[in-house]
Image (cartoon, rainbow, N blue to C red; front, side):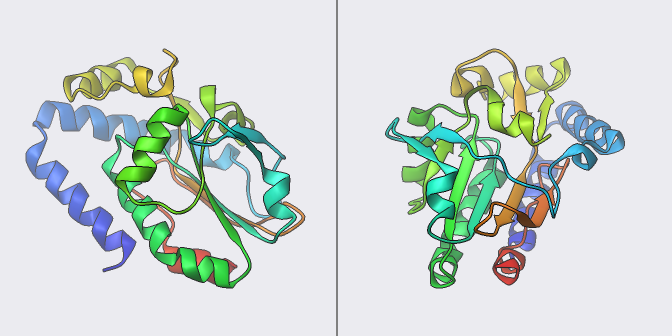
Length: 211
């Protein structure tokens, strides 16, 4: 099953099980982002990825340059381990990790969650690639990926016992749009996928083709 098909299963299940008033808030919030064309402001193909230093799940600092020195890099920005769509995407990326390595490339995932929460996500999904914590979305903001959750959406997530503030160790209620980038060894973007709709993700085969 393709990643798109897997995501559609979750989307259909959510539509069937989430109370209509809550689902409407979620859909309206996504529609507002799409209408805003927020992804138009994000880093695009041909752009230069800034070098960054972020902590991994052990709290150790890693930097992009060290990965670029070894070859191309795939970077996936995701919302958090509490998001079912993110977990499906992470598992799909794990499935193609051997092929990514065969091409001499590295894979990195980045979310605004704390290292401890990222460790939980990594262990839960049996991930063998680094997850880095972009606390306060400092890197994602520079790439034009960040939006603030509207109050109504915050309340819906709270009703689902999804404590975004606790996961991110702040009360900003800001999240990155799902984004996947492929970089050459110079840090130039050769493939970019950015979606206002959090139920959409880059197809793994497209990522491999870009490499």
